[in-house]
Image (cartoon, rainbow, N blue to C red; front, side):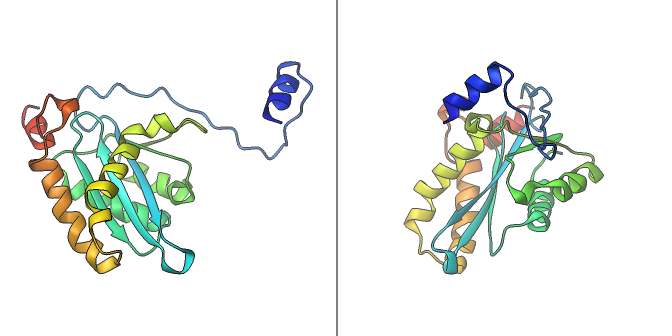
Length: 187
């Protein structure tokens, strides 16, 4: 079906709904220094009645990361998580990049702009745009959450311990076997 739609589009034979939201994507900045590009995402685990949620954020240059379990995901929680991460970090964020989840909608964007931070959405159907945070969430699941009881209380204790280890002790191959804090000290 998608091949047929692409062919019809190419031939100019399709019309789009007048209510379709067109996305504009400013050019992605090159993360040559910390703070220039920070990626944010959320994760959900479990059955509908027992969902557990985690927000994750990572600076693309230094790989400094922050994560926190929450009981619900929405724009208000996203803004609150962003503010906590901003206070925890040693640098101010310049641009936050997220996917198109409802928790990163207009209200979240307005909160970021009021804090002096730009907000950029990743391109639709391009999961590699947020690849660093997606990889970090996978690492968080493999190295922390899969080894912890699946409860909000256990995650609230284990995630901060893992984040401290991730940022200060765990060497990263992408950083020439340095830790994120070592990279931050060099800037």
